[in-house]
Image 1 (cartoon, helix red, strand yellow):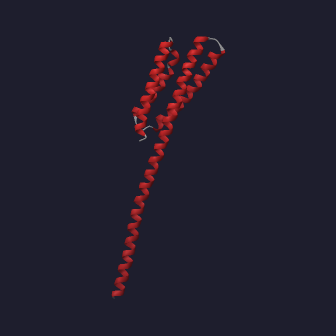
Image 2: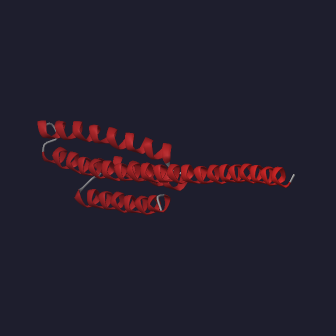
Image 3: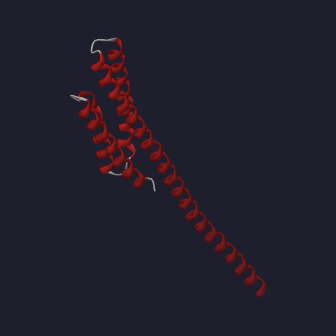
Length: 155
């Protein structure tokens, strides 16, 4: 009888140990999966936010070039090519903005990105060099503000 009881206790202990191991392993797996998903989202946000910053920087440069070429010779080939390039860069910046809107966890980040895009879009409409410089500086500063907000989202 003692042998049967010992065997039964051993089997019950083994089963209890297997169940406990299974429960703890599932919890550990869930935590590992959650951590991996958070890290992937963080990496994706980092890529999207930095791509947006790069696209807007190039768009700003293109808008300034468009302004300079138009003021040199409004009907020349260089002005036309600069306008075409500025439109291409606008498309890339808009695409990057859409990605920010899709992945951002904060409306403040999305609003900041939209504001930077709008400011950059208006640069080529400057009336003179001083206004061009001011518009470019404002867009650059707002881009820096966007980057600061976005940095908090990836920490």
